[in-house]
Length: 188
Image (cartoon, rainbow, N blue to C red):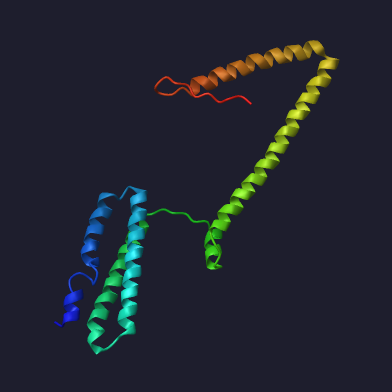
């Protein structure tokens, strides 16, 4: 065995084979933790990038003596890619197609986030405008009704006050915390 084989033999060139055994044990121990699964996939991707860089260096200075290390590094890359695939199966990440298309087009995926937020703000403003319009209509209707039917409007307001008090009491009962505190939503 020549010196280049001794350097890479047994540990995959950068400790990837012994690290893979540790990764597999860690993967089995924390198979239910999505954040840990994602971290394992990220670590595997970084290992693959390192192995690809090593392959690049080996191929760029290829000679007959470097064929065995090249084959070992290729086998290490294949093993790590297989490991990454197995780890990725445990991750359930949903990325919108728009984000992937932006990345494919060479654009920043933050543009998608900005566009979604701007769209939400615009829809929120439209909804707020509609709500304000209905509030103004209700106020005008009550004013007009009060002029035409003052007794009925007074009865309506009493019924609304009782109903609002009952709703508030129910909301407070439902929002009580286990320690006895109550979450209150400030009225506007």
